[in-house]
Length: 73
Image 1: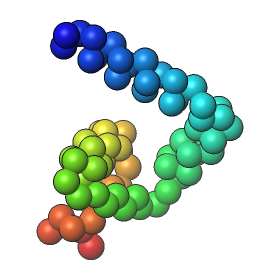
Image 2: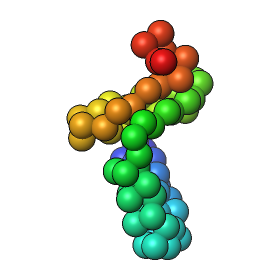
Image 3: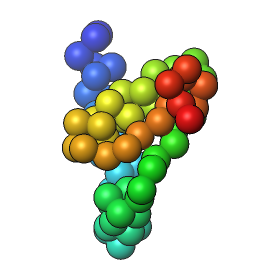
C-alpha cells in the first residue's frame, strides 16, 4: 500500500510539472539567479519546504533570507 501511495504522488507531481510551460521555468530560473537577495516565507509544512528550498539556494551561493528567521535583515 505504501508503494501505491508513492507511485500515486509521483504520478501527480509529474503531471503537475508537465503543465508548467518551459518558458516560465526558464524565466523563474533567470530571475532567481540574477536576484541580489531572495526572501522566502512560509509557515507550517510550507515553511519547512521553503526552508529546504532556501538551503538549496544558499548552496548555490545565493543570498537567501527566510522571513521570520532571526538572522533575516
